Length: 104
Image (tube, rainbow, N blue to C red; front, side, top):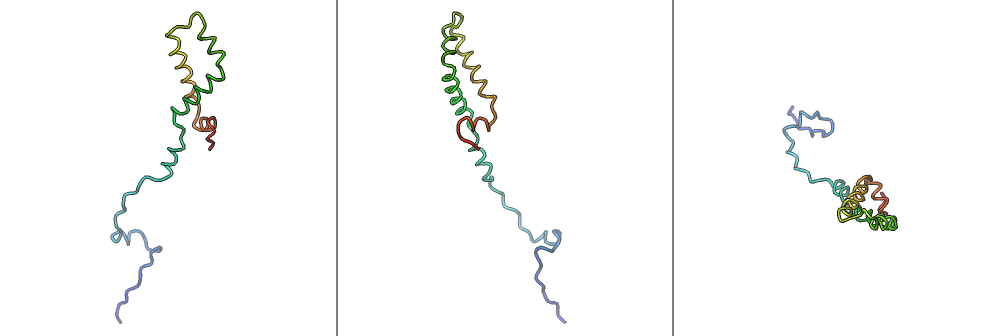
């Protein structure tokens, strides 16, 4: 009786038996979800601009009072701007998106 070749079952063979038959894996491309995640992220400068417009509109009268105060000088404006900008950095990505109407 001659030996007959039987087809190898793919799913039932142990990994060690087919190791030599495998080809090296090709490098994978970056996954799409990472790309989408970065595009959904609210850009820091976009939110900062949005936030400063909103805060200056909401507190316009108070800001005018500060600018007209006797102790307000050329050094005061950069300090005020930095203080306002720093508060914009306290919000989470979700809060930024919600505030800008982007929703998640």
